[in-house]
Structure formats: structure tokens, C-alpha cells
Image (cartoon, rainbow, N blue to C red):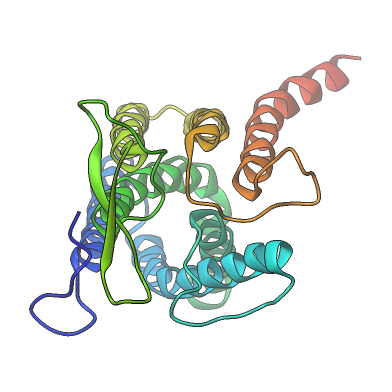
Length: 264
């Protein structure tokens, strides 16, 4: 829609919406943490960890996209046109966040609050991820990535594709999958916000299963190729979506299995 820089070099609508997503996620965390009486010291640790995990997550997002591209082209290259993938950012960012949460909680807070409140942190955290991701998808809409196939339908949007050898910009009318996904993520985030506000403990499977199913299906309609996996029928995102779904199912089943084992 509008992939151009404004105000200053390197700042565009994609960067703006990513920034808004991070801010929105931090606000949501603070609101839900206060509502659920999440310890103040642990809140501050999480907020610091969140800022660090955003930076690390972006590095992982680019790294994972470079690996995806290598599967397709046989060359591993990291440069300005490599791109980034959400799942890479999620894995890298979540990993560093958990490291800071547990290690920092032990070394800095010197208590067991990080273990005691981990379930609450998890339920609030996935809600924040969905909200931030929703804003990020609007950023994708403005940048012209993650779009659907060409269409003449009324809901199609003109998207910037690339600049040809002659320096001319190529635009096409495509299905705005980014907008559809943003709406889905905001709806999912609203549901999880309600559950977290009520103190429920189902947000993790709601997110992993809900988003996993959505992402697996929506990948069939994506038109921007992000590479292949060892499983030829699955895109990298679909393979990761299946892992998310299995993680959510395991989260629901493990407590049930444990109860049955104790009874027997």
C-alpha cells in the first residue's frame, strides 16, 4: 500500500506498526498483570525482558528466513532483502524471554515468584503476542509482503511487488491476507484478554491451537513464497503451525494423564 520511508530514512509504516504493536503488547501486559496481582518486581523484569526479546526476536526472524531461503536456493544469505518470518521471531524472542524470566528471577529477585506465577505469565504473554502480531500484520499490509494471490474481487488491494530492472515499480491487485490475519489476531487477542481478565488458564492452548489452525489454512492462499521444508507438501509456516497445535493439545492432555496416573 505505502512501502515508502517518511519523516526520516529507514522509517516507514511497517516500522511504525511494529512499534505500535510492541507498545500495545506492553500496555496489555501491564493491565492484565495488575488485574491478576502479578508481583511488581516480576513485572519490571518481564518488561525489561520484553524489550530485549523484541531485538533478539527480530534477529532470529531474519535468520530463520535466511534458512528458509537456503532450502529453496541452496545459498544462505543475510542482507537487506532477506526478509523476516514471524515464527523465527516468536521462537527466538520467546526463548530469550524465558531465559530472562527464570534466570533473572533467580539471580535478581532471589525468590520463587517466577516459578509460582509462571502459569499466569504464560496466559498473559500469549495474549500480548497476538496483539503485537496483529499490528505487525497491518505493517505487512503497508509493506506489501505476506499477501495472497492476484484477484479482481472487490476486496482486492493494490500492493507493491518489486522494482524491475528499469527502475519501475510493479504493483498488483491481490487478496489482502495480511488484513484478514490482523482481524483474526485482534479477535483472538480480545478473547484471550477476556479469559486472562477472568483469571482463566486456557490462553496458551487457545493461542497455539487457534493460531496454528488459522496459519496452517491461510498458508494455502499465500502467494509470496517463503521456501520449502524437508516435507515437500508443507511450507515452513505450516510445519511450525502443526508443532504449535501439538503443543496446545499436549498442554491440555498432560494434566488429564497425570490425574489418571495418580488414580491408578
